[in-house]
Amino acid sequence: MFSILMLLLAMVSFQAGASIAKTLFPVVGAIGMVTVRILLGTAILSVCFRPWRARIAPRARGALLVYGASLGLMNLCFYLALSRIPLGIAVALEFAGPLAVAVWGSRRAADLCWAALATGGLLLLLPIGHLHGGLDVLGILYALAAGACWALYIIFGKKAGASHGAQSVALGSLISCMIIAPLGIATAGSALLSRSILLPGLAVAILSTALPYTLEMMALTRIPARTYGILMSGEPALGALLGLLYLNERLSGLQWLAIGCVIAASIGTSLTAQQEKVPLPG
Image (cartoon, rainbow, N blue to C red; front, side):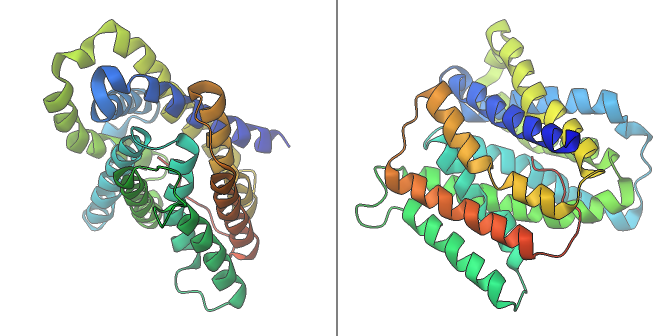
């Protein structure tokens, strides 16, 4: 039970950090905010895991590079999506990535049914006819791109984690810094160093990176991957709820139905999937 509570706390922490980050977009933009989060989050992870002590095997370099790049681009695309569409919808669309990984290559009828349910939910969120409720098309594309990066993150994160364990998180964050930081500095410049950004940015880095990663690492050693997947399935609803309470983002009944379809598909996939550990989300 304690492990489940840790995982639930990690989910709340991550979505709370995203909510705070979105309020800072008018000051430094989505790119600037993700830069602050990644830089400060990497600093915290580096102190905890000391990546400079890692010995990187030549055969593991490729997987580690893709893992770090997908981590950075996943966060960048997700924040760009948040700047245009509600938090809960962005999280639901992003879930297309891990769901695709879960059912990829499966020939079981149950998995195909869950994939069809998830696809139906995602279609309800896409700008088809008059169903989209005014959603920004580019925001939708950013969220789907974040999902694609999440899929790569899962695939290559397993390979990187097999070689470097917990240090792979800090190593991946360092790689993501090299990719994202130049973009953030170019777009936001000296505004990134202002106290009005650094202090809440530190809170975002702790809530969205350091705290949830630590809690999830502790939880994953005590609970099966299936339980992890079922609990994580509630994240789109949690994002929508925090978006409503903190950002005043009100969703239509159809959008809540779409999120419900994605959650149900994720729970179903978790129940029928094979038992295996899942890398931490970005």
